Length: 300
Image 1 (cartoon, helix red, strand yellow):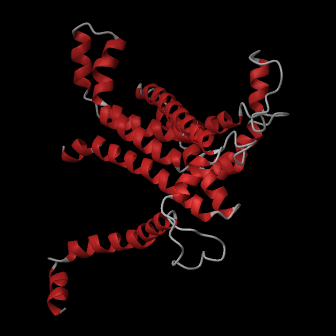
Image 2 (cartoon, rainbow, N blue to C red):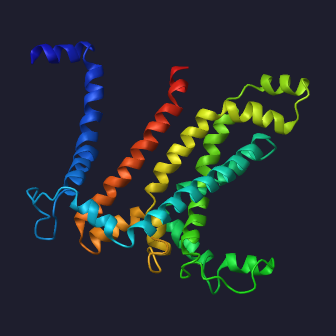
Image 3 (cartoon, rainbow, N blue to C red):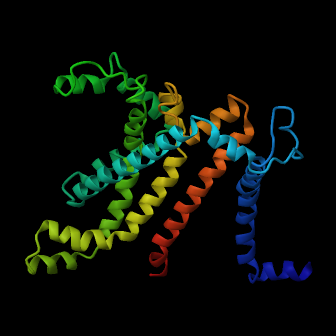
């Protein structure tokens, strides 16, 4: 023990201490709950056995029962639509804004800062704002669409099964666009200007420079953004709780909200844990893609 303390005091073991404390914190705060959740997905859990770790082991019964339920596949389909629509919308609009502010016109810096307001706002606050915007009777979105002759009658975005999921997607796109814009702006700033000058001297037009220089040079940034977008989108819960509550009739329900609903409304903790484990697999996949996308940046 004295030798260990002497090593830390001399600085030779200080790096081990710096690593040990964060790893211990992560294991206690994230590792143990994760392990507990995985174990619970293979057990029979009810209100009376929730307080104990020793519960009947049922194997994959929770998984088979979950996929036997008629609402499982529609909710998984909703999740795919929500993830793909949100990531695509956030990326395309964020990339467009990043290219727009890349011109660096007067006032671009403070205008770009204004877009960060959506990212720093809590999800429940964003949900409350979009509740007002998407209101079927007096919503701003319906007013704009009617004045533009896009629609002739009000659309009840939150209560119509055909539009409820898209209502949350629109709100989530607004919430995450600024994050995409900032990361893409950083990626654009890292491209050497000499490449564009040389391409322009060779006669390449704007689109040719974009496809042959901008996109290839931002491949790692785009991979990281898509991976982080998948992780953040699969974690999105506040907007569903504030706008649609998964309804009507599960038309806007997704896995992350369904896991909470099963656990804390229906008290089916085992199936709630089962859904969480399935989501963990996709999050781990996105994490691997993110690490691989940024690997050469760390080496460089």
